[in-house]
Length: 148
Picture (cartoon, rainbow, N blue to C red):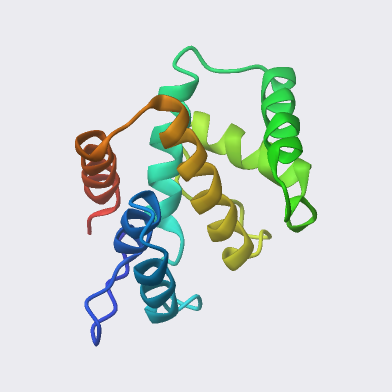
């Protein structure tokens, strides 16, 4: 696997996630635009970071009911945009993340999955209280998991 570094810009998915976690929204938008969603490994690095964060949030695992409750609370907390997310898909992403899956099933849309992973990872990082050092560790671990 790889973090899909764009050979022209040198940008990878974890750069995008890092910008989001730092609330660098201009950098996030610029770096996101540099990614190619048709790439073979698109979404895997951010999916790995999401999985790491999920396993930190639920270190003992979670039942389907707990996942559904978390997803419902997440969707209810959004001031806008909840309609952009399907609760069933989010639940599946959490289940995959808890089971150390770094990539969703093939029938899920890669761009929507990436969007969900980014938003949920941001939320989990905030819930876990990960500061800059913890965020760097998360990104480094995700990079190791997805290194070629």
